[in-house]
Image (cartoon, rainbow, N blue to C red):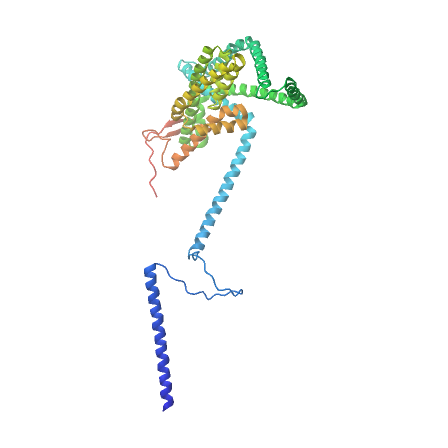
Length: 453
């Protein structure tokens, strides 16, 4: 009898111990839950992972990966891969287009761009002649001939003063070199005449050693001048056709692109033409003011070659910002050679004042109304154009940048739901015609946006 009773007591003791363990675990869970509620965090259970080193397990402060990390990483990788190959395709297309434009630039594109710029200058006169019942061809030819006559007249006006004062400038250069030599022989340099002669001989020997390169550069310059003259003649011929058939080019381009693209082609063409015309007008106004201000100052100070310097200042204004500095540098150099350091300082002051008025008063007003280009963009465009195509690149850089800005703004407006191709009544240019011909006209009814899907 004692055996079963003892077993029963032992079983009851084990059951009681199990109940105590469950109660302990329950109390521990309740305590842990209370800790979570109070502190907002849980204490990790003790690690039971042991590696072969025998060291005790360690913990990290990095959070455990979430259940959606892998899926999100895969999605981000797919987006990055799609963006990468699209970027590579766009970059390749830009490189190919740039290469083609570079090949066609000097032989095809340069005369076309120059012809368009010349046409913007001559179009007001050609339009007046057309209204005076001149035939289109005669109006275009008259405009081109008057433009050439004006250019030749300017050259003929500035050539005699230059020829007459060449000897005076040569004497001024000689006296200027003598002044430099006297300055070098005095303090703080205190160079002897023999040392200066040695440096001069060294410079002469260097020039003689590089005579072949100089001759090569001279031949290259002659070839460039010849190519420039050919391009100028071709540009004038294209200008004649632009003036004669200009109003017919837009319907032709619209007919090649189709009725859906015709409104955009028409509006972009109008905006581009207005931008080029505005550039020519505002730079001519700036050049006229610069030339008048600097020329008046040179005339008062008695600096020679006033008329040539005025003409250079006027044409240099067509290279914004950079051209003004170059023209001012010429004026200061002529004053330094002819009249000395004091007069050169006065000329420099006049140039700085005129350029400050231009840069802080005229350019913000004109560019804000016309090109809408920041001064930093203008400087970068001129620098890039000069590095790529020299003087021609500097001249064409700003109008090209302005045209790129026109394309960008037009595309941005389309993406934002605005419609610059529509007029105030909501009408758009419409291509109408048949197999015999086509023309652009405004649509009769306003164009409405399609209903959102």
